[in-house]
Length: 413
Ligand SMILES: *Cc1c(COP(=O)(O)O)cnc(C)c1O
Image: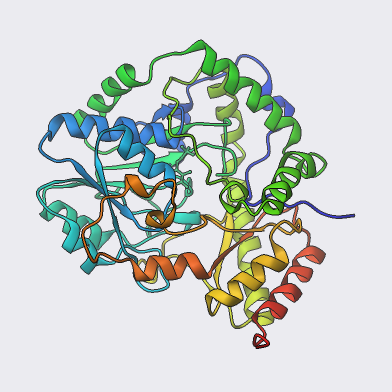
């Protein structure tokens, strides 16, 4: 039977999660899980970022730029544009997800409102130099942990809570814990936290239509996010997009410019509270499976460079929705993608290209003459995401290793 592994190890919902009633204080439940005083729940990670930027902008009207990694989710660009802010993108360290401190120092200045170091694919990035550079310029640090709910710094603190100004998480489908679309914002300073709550009441009020739609979508997700449902819900549209040569749709990078902004209803919050009870065990299993599969990959395909938590943060504990691997060069990555994307084995691209290279989002990225992002572009050209879903069986993983071995063989000229 052909498998259809989902691209990430999202936490499946059980029917008991969907029952009416129960504790609906998802913010309090997340605060207990993360070990922080308070968590503000929003309708998406993007909405959490919009709320954060709105509150910051009110206190620093002279600052109108946001700095994000040059390889990140295009929704970050849409959030900045929504807030009327200029987005600058910063290069990465070579073969790494860490922001390059030299490049960041060159971008940071009196116009910088916030810098967004990003923990992509659950990998813990090096934030200490980012904080030093941003804070010296009078800018704030908002950690983008959209893909890293549950990741911990060395010592066990939740990422983003030991020196940065804010951190946000996504509760979207495919990012771990999900209420179909949702977000969580953690703000260190109590006064700024209150300002974010006020901003949210203004920019993201209750809207019946959106809550009904998201509730229906969450039910559909609960029904279809299982091995029997994935060929229809994920595989079919994926293969259709690939057949049309539409990588942006295949990777799920085709975002609507209009950002839905509304509060999250009681039922979806209660679903989140019940599912969250299973998240710690789910993340532990994912970590163990990732370790075992990374060891297998190292043995079978030693040419791959596997992305770990940043070497600059020893002792950090990321989460493992996917494994990220760099192929030796762009041609071999293309060979791997040609052989594996859409084959049901959970291989995909985190994002199709570096943010300034998307035709449809480039206009949201401000750039100065001669500016380049060589390491981010290199990362985008060589990276491959491999699902860490338990529904990708050992036999399938073995087939995947064999296909990767073939892809890294010297190319016939
Ligand atoms: C998904 C994502 C976001 C936005 O989160 P949503 O909940 O989908 O709005 C922001 N940043 C990164 C890195 C993401 O992957």
